[in-house]
Image (tube, rainbow, N blue to C red):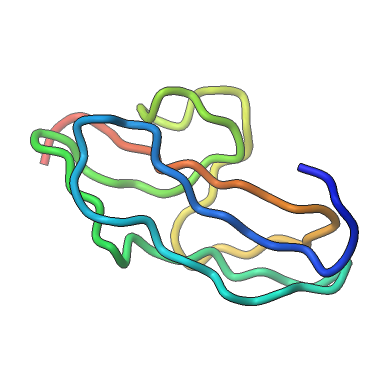
Length: 93
């Protein structure tokens, strides 16, 4: 994170067993702007797992329990720095 305005939201996926692409948010946000979290539009696919949203901390991809802030697709937050959101999954269909 860091940098100055305008701020960017980057979507990332660190789970190596997935196929597909992360969404891209082309918007440059001013500090204090509201960001609407994108869905799994790639879509990312991981056999045997279900995509559940995005986390502000990379926890290896499972269950969003890595200590970051979890965001469901369509949730919103106020941006005040560059943000990277990581794909989060749960086991099962």
